[in-house]
Image (cartoon, rainbow, N blue to C red; front, side, top):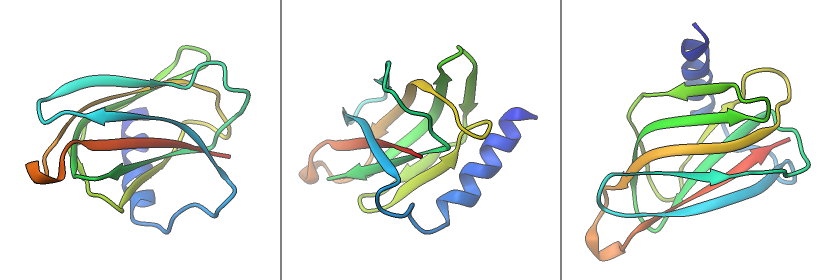
Length: 128
């Protein structure tokens, strides 16, 4: 049930407007190869609590197979829906609960766009 709520909030929020400026904190980025890979962005001991996350692609499209959010207390939310993130678009979703510390966000993904555009870059922001 928790995964269903997580998925529903991701799909609803991905169709909404971007988060107002000033409420996002850059958490990290990863370059994405054209071969499937699994990697994470360590948020670590960042001194902040977040109500959501925003992922954006640059340079090329990214197919995301799996997103795992690992919270500060060790709890995990997983989304296994296949998504395609194109440059200039974003995926926004609320974290489970009101405000949560986030330790790590893991992705299973690959670049799926044009080879001429090079590898994609996935950038992650926390929403306050």
